[in-house]
Image (cartoon, rainbow, N blue to C red; front, top):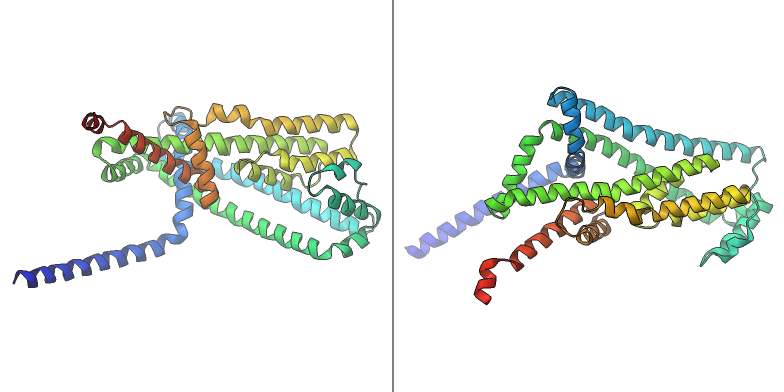
Length: 356
């Protein structure tokens, strides 16, 4: 009898677990298209919350009005530079196409110093020299390479356009989160409390919040500063397609690569078309921009946290390598939580007492 009862209970438990698993998978598949925008919305809401509090107090504590104003401002900040960069790329492309069709497009002669560039210097100099002497022949010679570059650029542009639309949705979602910030924070504490203990739930929720803000300021914030400064310098020097170069600088800075990797090509162009003095000033300006993260990151990354800055930075870089830009935040949060859990276990008084 007991054996039959055990078998019956085991079968019933297996059926229930199977149905729960199917329901969980089904729910995940339904919300899967919205996971990334929702996660980005949550990250943006947490990062912007201190400023949102000031905005809320400025409108008399009206939460919904503040969230609407924030959403409109954030969308304007996102869309305006996107349109400016797009217009810059379109205008530059149209001008180049028009001048090429009229036979008036001229490529400046390559500087001899290009030959000394590592790895690609000789090949780049030869291609540049051919283009400056005979553009038609150059296009025919490198037709297959130019076609691949064009396809890559179109792919990047399509990806950027999709990313902008995704961020528009994420900003709207972040506005909804901010309008219900108190409830969302309480739910987060409950989740961490169930995963750890009631005493630690709030601590880990606060750690996640501080980590998001730290990465937003120390990684994305610094990258945005470097991209904006680069754009200003290129606009002053009249660099064609400055919007596209600014995008490349932003990507490099987010990936924790020195922006000079991109700005070096821009500087080479400036040296080929401008006088020596302004070109040298621009190069020094680019070097300063590239080196600026050396003192900007310590100012912003890990500020207000007990977790070492190195842990946050390694988590952000490793997360980005694993999951893309969203991994900047997820990786930093996971590694920070893992570090804190490990340190809590390492410093557990009961374990230490038992070992001694």
